[in-house]
Length: 69
Image (cartoon, rainbow, N blue to C red):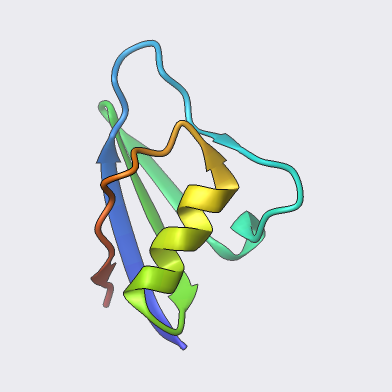
């Protein structure tokens, strides 16, 4: 598995809420001044993106995963 990250802007008043029965226990989340960065492992960037889209309410649809170090 490869390690990926996604950073999204979280507008004031909006929240990102984990959905029940998701894989988010395998992810790390860093919040900083209106930005949220998710780190985690997946086989492909697309798989990581789909895990976040399926696992988080409020996640923007146009996320793009990049390989993390």
